Length: 388
Image 1 (cartoon, rainbow, N blue to C red):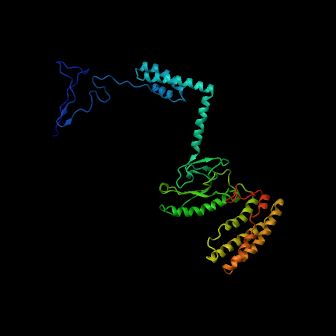
Image 2: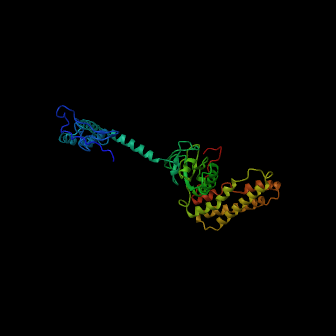
Image 3: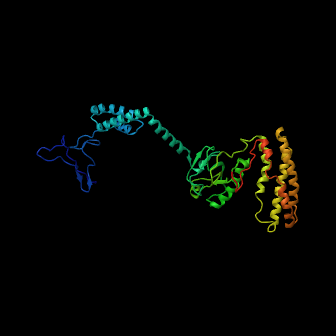
């Protein structure tokens, strides 16, 4: 049989001394186990000898908070005035809170009226609005979007926490040309593989974004933001491509793609740009050291020249631009013959013999007059060592 616990005597009302002077009984216990877990009278009863707890008026609290918050002083004044009679009627606490809220709200309301009358409040609000606007322009590099111009307070260093989006008409460090997702890796591959991929992909993206290469200022180069090891773990696979400079900020957008070019402008640039691109890809080794690489490069440039000749000849150009484009076509005809000899050189000596005449035949400006006639940028960026 289970041991039973003794039945506690019934307490006398009022919680005072019992007849005969004995004190009111406390909780009974059985050996090794408490009998009662709370005060007599059941859950929610007030313990003997303690007055009932009064609640704090909610409007009084609201009045104080509204009085502290400078933009809500009239509300705090109203809440405090409503709270005082409620506190008296319901015997609640919070009278001090309500009075404090009324006083603070009255002072804040007075300052608000003075500020509006003198214009001081407008200055503060404008400053607040400018701060919010500036904060809204601060972004992670990976939240940048195509066409946005930005400044990088980190100086385009390896790791950048945030950048500020600005109007492209203002001086800026870079302009976003696009982005792409890194694929083909289940785990973090390291910076080198991602960097190598970014160089290739961003070069293509940038070329399509700024087809009119003469719009790109000097000292502005291909730039990109890569995922870090930490962001990769969080699912980041985005490479953001841009044109950027680590020197003097530049102004104006470099964008010149199918969204901003006419069909004639686009056709012209697609025809002649490969010549310009390949002219910068001449092998570092001289023909005496690597003849085959140099001859191969000459052949690729010859193919670009011939492709441009075909593109210019087969297009029905606007009447005012025809003479300039016809003149450029003749220059490219001559260049094709000279570069054909260079690409067909049998050895390094023959290559050197044809080298200078090939370069002299290639139009240095690649059609400045034709560009002017088509409404494109007609002045190349200032070269190294010259004034912009």
